[in-house]
Length: 71
Image 1 (cartoon, rainbow, N blue to C red):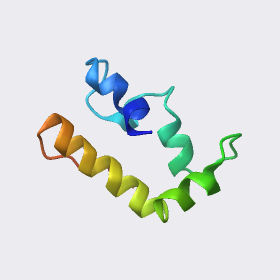
Image 2: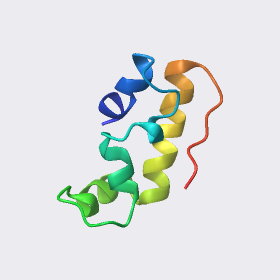
Image 3: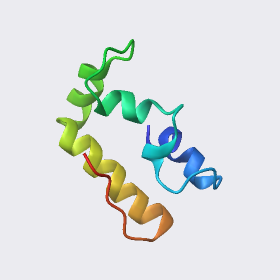
């Protein structure tokens, strides 16, 4: 899942994965209605905070920089 969300960052389209309007990341973290299986995804990660923390930690490991995804 991180690979998909980070692809636009990897290819230098954006600096922050939350900026990519076509990403499912924002839909998964948001509260708006979506066709995505948000509850299932959040269950896999143990909740929204863990989902966001996972992405922050992966970004730091993959891109070797400090990074915080804001709620």
